[in-house]
Length: 197
Picture (cartoon, rainbow, N blue to C red):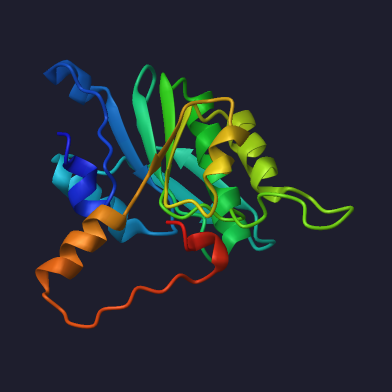
């Protein structure tokens, strides 16, 4: 299982499974941000995505209901907080809360893209450190662990009081690019903060 998520999502992360009965306690759910990624992860793990009802009311509010018992289960929620960031973040928080209220044993939020990561410090007076606020929201909603990929700044890990796995896509991307045997290849960072990565 070690390469389970790494092949699909370029994450070097594995749920710890010690017996077949542990696999029965593992549940994987997807938010609406990237269902194809979640389906591919589920396929690679040889399991189905957990059933969930997601409705949006006329005023834009979301309704989430987990459609199976997850009592005592280790739940993994795949939901990048990409555009539209606020919608996907709120959906993640609601799913986490629904899983907590359904008595999941462990809730891991798998967030390939961590929205608000660039708001990791104050650059002027009277500003929010929104990356920290997002960390607080996920923790308060009920997440027990976070898995995120290629953070804008590694210091974001310190904003959490729960385990945080920061995984890197560069080894997978580098191997892929090297396999193409391209000449004069240039890799460009989108901003100064990404140069070190």
